[in-house]
Length: 185
Image (cartoon, rainbow, N blue to C red; front, side, top):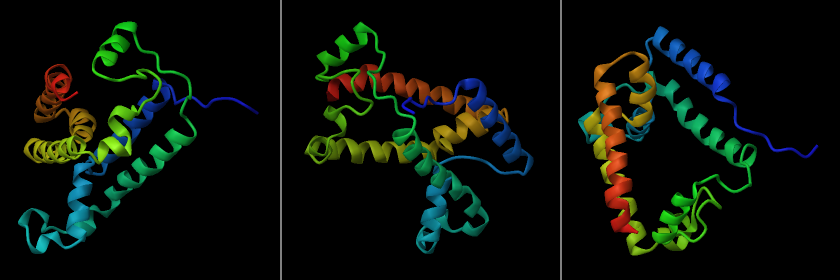
């Protein structure tokens, strides 16, 4: 049988996310990717040197399933749910991306101009990874969590700081794509 699997529609995936969030809230748990990094660092012994990582990581082991789920989900999405057809982009977006140096806009989710090994291991690529990683780490720590934690858990539990953080994430994304990205590329 030759057919392309499609991602689950919103009316299936949305309620499933809601059920998971209800269960997490019911059992007094929170969801977020950055808390897993803290747990992994603590497991590796970072708590002996940095007070932030000195906590009972065994109580947070369950949350490492999020990391496993992201890895397995990414594999499934790429190998089973990817649609090999072109990405539906407007002609204006394609023109804008071509002006920024992207030759095959709309042909791949991961353009070679950004994700080829040659570009990643260039000086510019390494600087972007290092500075971007620092800014993401700083922002996550400063905001008290990552985008997934605030946008899914925080908003689900009606936390005002999460609403402020999510608004900040969107504003930061707009600044990046409209002001900084054209300078870098």
